[in-house]
Length: 285
Image 1 (cartoon, rainbow, N blue to C red):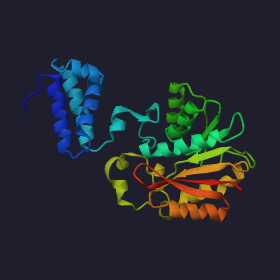
Image 2: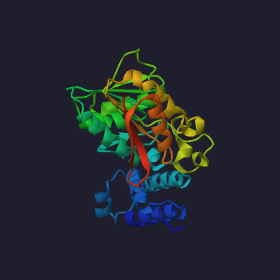
Image 3: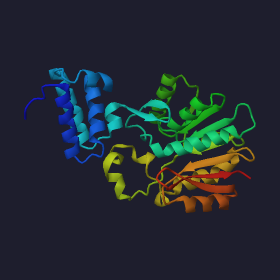
Image 4: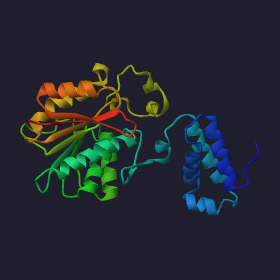
């Protein structure tokens, strides 16, 4: 194969390889990989497109492209993922933030704004990279932001993101609500827990192969962690305070039923941009 003589030619070669690998956005990902390989942003790559890449730049671009061709998530290769208005560091220690989770952030902001207290206490259960609670703290600095995760590696990632963004969040290690004493209550609780069935074949495809299984799969056909959170959060919500949950596209009916069974009021589900019921909200009686 002829060695690409210019950055433009190298970009075309990366795009061709990613397209041949069946990736959905080969042009975008080729630019991202070349940027990572060269340290140049998109505008500079365009301006210097006729420059010859160095040998080390070609080798780096080839190595990054091989990782992507093998299916490794682009977020892991780059070490970063944009979410909401934030640029977050990501790793194999936690779930890669998804665009559909921004609906959960949007509705949580509305719940915070409806709270009459000057400094609402907001809790994110299973925070992972910290994406949700950091987005909320960035948008509403007055909140008292708290987040839990059972994974110490995920919490290290979340704390690193909080430090990089200069956001004050209390991170606690523990499964769901276990770090809290009885009666410790919040104005808003949000969570994007694992909700894929353990035997779902999608866990062995695409990006999911590279993400922590414990952040993806849950017992009871994917509903186990959702049910645990629904059952245990009433004791940690102030009267009239909401619980907001992200769940699978086909789980809204089961989540609504469980919330109603536990005693939540005003239970409703909201659709993501793809038209799937993705977030369910209930208010503590």
